[in-house]
Each structure stands twice: as C-alpha cells, then as structure tokens.
Image (cartoon, rainbow, N blue to C red; front, side, top):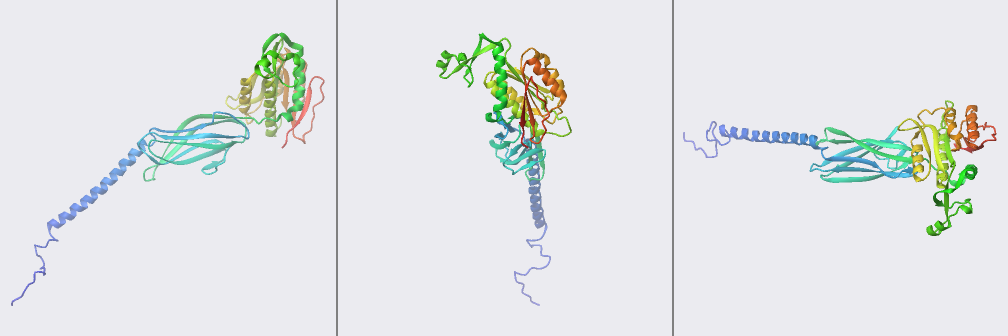
Length: 406
C-alpha cells in the first residue's frame, strides 16, 4: 500500500525530536542549578549583611542625655537634651533610645512614656549615615531634689527586623531642683523678730574701726553707716560693712524628725522652704548664716551641716544641701544634736533659729539652754491648723507658730 506521510507528523521514537533527548535534560539541570546558586548567593549575602550589621551597628554611635546646666526651683519647668550621633556609613533604620528619671520630673509629652517608681522615656529614631539628631525635651520639676541619669539603653533590630540587639551606655548628668521659696510678705513676722535680735547683737559687738566691705543700702540701715563717697561712685546708696569682735551670725536648726509612726512630709517641706527663705534674706543683708539639720544627704547619707558664711556662694551651698536632703532616710534625735551645739553658741558666735514641728520637753529644754548661752533665740513651730500648740512661753527666746496648709 502506498501511504503518503506529511512532514508535520511525528513518529514515536523519532531521534530527531528537538524537545527530547540528553541535550534537553542537560539544559533543564543547568537552569535549575543557576536558580539554586542565585538563591544560595542571596541567602549568603543576607547572612553576611546581617553579620556585618550585628558587628557594626553600635560602632561610632554616640547616645547622650544631658540635663540643663542651670538649677531650677520646685514647680518650675526645665529641659534635657537627647543627642544621637551616627559617625559611620552604616545607617540604622530603627533605633530605640530609653532612659529613666525619677517620677518627680513630669514629662508633658506622655507618648512613649511610662510611669511607675520612675519615669521611663523611650524614643524611636531612624538614623542615616553620618547624621546627628538632637532633641530638647521639656519637663516639670514637681518636687525639690537631686536628680541623676546614670545610663541609657539603645536597641535596634536586624535588617529583617527579626532579631533584637541592645547596649547599655553609661551617662553622668544631674539636676538640682531647689526648694520652693516663700514670698517676702509671708516672712515679715519671723524675719522682723530675727532681725531685731541680729541688730542688738551687732550693736553690742560691732567694731567701728574694722572695715570689711560694702553692700547696697537696705531699709532700716542707720544713716551713719552710709558711705557717701562710694555711693556717689556707684550711683546708689552703699553701706559700710564692719567686722565685729564677735560677728553676728545666724545658725538655722532644721528638725525633720518624726517622733511617731506618722509621717509629716508636707510640714518638713514647709520647714525646708522656711529655712532657705530666711537664709536668703539674711545673706542679702550681709549676715553670716549657717545650717544644721538632722536630715541626711541623699548622696553621702550623712547629716547635713553648713558652717556660717556670707555671699552668693554660701546661698548656693545652702540651696544644694537642702535640695539633697532626703526625707526617706532616718533622721537623728534633735535634742542630742542641739546639745552638741552648746559650746559654739556659748562663745557668742551665733543666734539659734529652730524650725521644728516637735514640741517635746527634751527639745524645749535644750533649745532654752542654747538661748541662755547665746543671749537670744527664735523658735518657729511648723504645725497644721488643727494641731495643738503645746509650747510654753520662754523669757529667753521668741516662739512663733507657723501654720502649714494641708
């Protein structure tokens, strides 16, 4: 039989088929191998990139948190500066910086902030290569104290965001929050009584032939103390400061002891404000002022004592010491502390001013002994309005009740 075969028909087993045979299988294998090698290279590249990122993400990376240089008073606003500097070619897509401060420092931006015993502040940045980021964060200093930031924690994730890496960076920055001061108008009664004792002491011991310096005229200064030549030169009234055979000094005794299990933090804080406000007005008039308290220093945990002195530096020293006074540390017995001061006052070197809410007989006896030794004294009794005043009258010292609002 004659059969016509067309060229388009393929017979089974035709060895000339281009899509079958050893060459075709070899091409498929080569293509699969290429894909495999590409995938392997990608995985290896990713591994190397992750390894390089882990090794170098914190290299030449600086994170700093710094309080402002100037101290503030309780109730005022302050700020700190947060700085991140990346000095390398590697960028950081996600960097979290965190630090903690005492909860008495209140951040107005509550976002990324959590509060417990401390305030934890967290911020997230995207940092490019060779970039410096600087932020100023404002907060409210709600309570006097000495506040520190000792470390910051930085955290980042790998390139695929599947692994965390962190580092703790030491810091050293602090802020003084000074006690709240009392308006001069409220201090009129205790200050006038104290100044009366100071003026008597100065008249008794002042040496008119020993010139110590000049200060600005204050209401109540006698006319014979005005230095007219210096006043003409300065453009305002200037008063001579004279040394004395026994210079009038004021020693402020601040009692922060709680004699019972009840804690009176508000009263003690009012006493601290009273002490520093009195000291400021005395120092402005050139009167040497010191401070002794049974309260303990937040840093050293030792009782605080500042020897009498004058000038702006003395006021700063008093402010700093009272800012560091820690009411959570146990206070010593105040009658024992007063007893140790007898020799100093028996030499006529200071007028004692006691600020205390306590009214026990041992404290009264010791204070009256000091008043006799020094010739005069002032006791400011800090009490709530509903507290009973138990102190008897004394011919040797002035006693004033100072009511503390709840």
